[in-house]
Length: 323
Ligand SMILES: NC(=O)c1ccc[n+]([C@@H]2O[C@H](COP(=O)([O-])OP(=O)(O)OC[C@H]3O[C@@H](n4cnc5c(N)ncnc54)[C@H](O)[C@@H]3O)[C@@H](O)[C@H]2O)c1
Image (cartoon, rainbow, N blue to C red; front, top):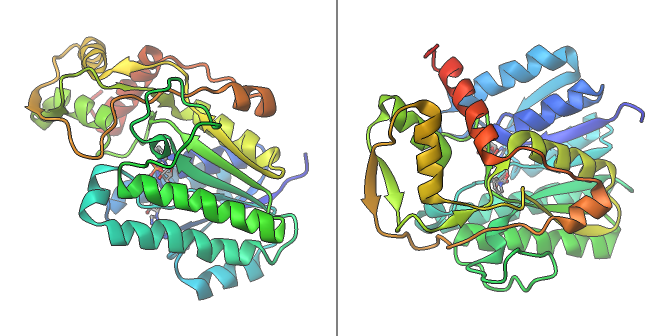
């Protein structure tokens, strides 16, 4: 395949920095747009980007700015002949969205529309949208299939991701924009956001103090290793035709209690816990039916959670100078 130029929004974030590295590794040019907001320490994002540059050199370009800045977005599209957009920039996280729903709406919906307004002007430009398993709400038909009804999101975050999918569909319908909307199931691995469960539990084992443990431990999640997600994202970019929604998960579930036990076993230290009731907006289960992504994209996730946890702990210790 010929080298391409890809805009990666949120390119300094957890998933974005890995996607940039994967694209650079196969010879593409990457332009990252990121506003380095303080949802978590922006110094972490600077380090992520420094690692991207180390692997990509001058083929990695960074523009610091906001996806809601229409002038900036227009100038980026005028400067670069993009072949595709991987749109990952967003306010992520379910619980914080309950406290600041208007900000989530502004970034996740208006920001997405601001990009789509440029994408629609360039025929054939492919658009990969980072959606979320949270669109399934408190669903009990497991595993979750793309064909299931998703009209019952249970958090503002989930509602913004669902709205993003709907806007993408409208732009596909009206302007022929090819779209892959990817429903990620809890992603973890090196550079994972520090406020996410696995990262917090591992930090707690290394002296970070007790960490909230919500509910009775029976909630189950489909945890997806970062390398598998990145593989799915790149495949969805390369095979972006029509309008398609894909689940990207491992299609295996782990209970919160099992997760904590395995993290304790991997680190060799028990996780200090602060037991709390289940939180509003949380769901009991996520589990991906990935047959569509397997069939249409050739997606084949291969990292089970125990192997992935070992790799995460290894990275965590190296990144924090813990030998
Ligand atoms: N990590 C997961 O488990 C998960 C699960 C489902 C969906 N997602 C989605 O995947 C995407 C990436 O998630 P992540 O975990 O890498 O999060 P992240 O916070 O590490 O990455 C998002 C990046 O976007 C940037 N950003 C945020 N608002 C911006 C704006 N207005 N303009 C420009 N840049 C902005 C941030 O600075 C950050 O670097 C998000 O859309 C998220 O909703 C993630």
